[in-house]
Image 1 (cartoon, one colour):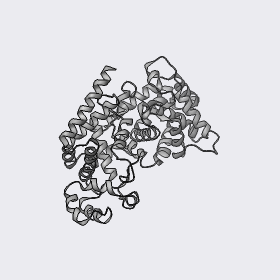
Image 2: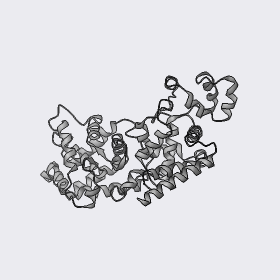
Image 3: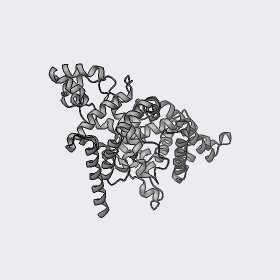
Image 4: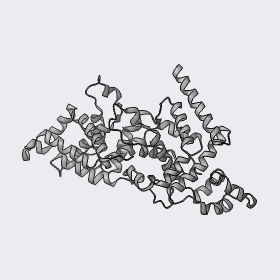
Amino acid sequence: FLDTPSVMERQLALDWRRCVCKERFRKHVQVEDITLKLKQGGSSLDKVLEGLRKTLSTHKTLLHSVFNYYSVMTAGSGGEGALAISANAWHQLMIDAGIMDPDSKTCKQQHCDMVFIATNYEENKNSYQSEVNLDDKLMRFEFYEALVRTAVIKYVRPGPCDSSVEALDRLLATNLSRLSPEALHDPNTFRTHRLYTVGVDEEVKKHARLLRAVFNLFCAKRGSGVELRLESWLQLLENYNVFGDHTGVSKREAKLIFSWSQMVVVDEIQRRKRACSLTWTDFLEAICRLADLVSPPPADELEALLREVVLVPEDQLAEVMGAHPWFTYYTKITRDKARTFKRSSAELCAEKSQPLEDKVHAFMDYLTQVLHTAWDTSEDERLILKMSAMASAICNTSDLL
């Protein structure tokens, strides 16, 4: 499961068609592109628009990463606004990319704000697209339009570019490419280099039934069928004590994991709920990314940490090591010690040294026992039955409403 170039190209092509259907956008390009004014090189509006599309296509992986990062960072608790860029996020992007310039005559804060407002204008307010489109945020197709408008105020109006195509390429290659590693993260990198291995596959299969019960329960709680919404993902991690200094996981990082685990959805309008959710396969990836972030101590270091850091008595050490050592480690370690002994690899974009299957094994040791404690069980089968029964009861109740 990868975001293949062909799928991403289909996604961009559909989004671009929605852009060029907007008469205001076409007029903007017609008026602002100097090559069109001067009719240089046989330029026509259609040729310029096609040039803009090709430029976006060249940078489609970059655009996918940047859009997802800035949309999820200000998504709040979730909902269908989780895949759209708010005004605050747009403002932050303009700062982070070095686009907004207080000394510029054409690209100050007010100019960047006007790009956001102009792009958000909906020409046909009676269409289904307008109904789904969020009034105060940029959808993915609007993000492309906003970048074209931004390229004009940054590089065409003040110079040095005459062509909006040249300006857009410069904006993407010079400004967006300077963003943080998290904003530029390509989800396929983790999948090809860490996730898709025999060891990870075997480890995930050991816990698949339990994880499926968790997934179904939290899908049911939000009435979202077989798709997990961002708010449900955050609730899951909150309920089962994943957030905190003991694991080093924050809500900000959990949102990014959610976003990076989603496969590309070609049509963000017609398949809005799917575009803002995790499927079962996406969820498994998210659990693995979570384990990679937590970066539990390897087995050969764990006994010493339990003895010297967590202070497990010597006469209990063998029993703990033979039962659930990572659960004991994460439930007993203090906040200060957790910060002190946090591993350098316990960051989203840090270099990793442990095999991912080892991390998944350790993280599931912790999560499984947290679940057992929460549901007052000691056997996995009993735990699965309890959660499945609860999910069914919630679904049946929803059907009656």
